[in-house]
Image (cartoon, rainbow, N blue to C red):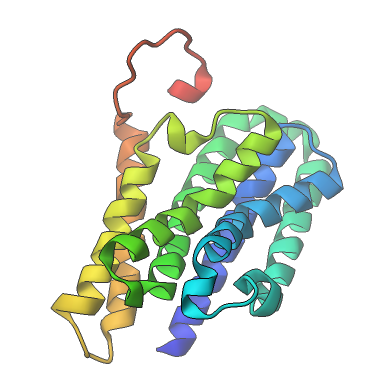
Amino acid sequence: METLLEIINIIGIISFAAAGAMVAIDKEADLFGVVTLSLVTCFGGGLIRDMIAGQSIGKVLPAVFTELQLEIVICILTALAVFFIAMATKEKYIKEETTVEKINNVLDALGIGVFSVMGTSAYIELGFFISIFMGLLTSVGGSITRDVILGIIPTVLRKRIYAIACLIGSSSYYLIVTYFMKGMPSANIVATIACISIIFIIRMCATIFLWNLPVAIKFTKDKTDN
């Protein structure tokens, strides 16, 4: 069971790293920029989370500096792979931009599911609201930071009920572990699969059916709104 959870964790790292690298490539970042923004996407949320609440559970340093060496290596290797694939297939990469965006969306949806689990589980002993908030912060904090660095409005603030999907998924994880399957050996794995699945399904449905929260006034329209 622990092995399965570790595999899910690695899949999430690869997914988020690739998604972050693709966004950086789309904004014409160089090699260092792609790797850096991929790292920010993966670990920015967890870093902010641990800096905010780490002292409450006795953590001196954020987990990214003490526990995630393998994950950092995986993230860097993934970012490098995406960068060099894009460079080697430059013309096709540009021509298939719509397909690349769809792949990025799928990877991002999978990544936020895994990272929602990470954040919620790390602080689950602090209660429902704190653990859910930490799940949300872990899953979207890195993407928000990346987008701010790139000078674009973060996706979480403008489309596809991004944050709501994370809140629903994190809530399901908490409820399964602390209520529905409390004390059961398989609770963590069931909750993990449920959280990731719920978030992924909501994000895919939001993409297919163009689900968005209402805006007061829509002044502009571009391809990212479709």
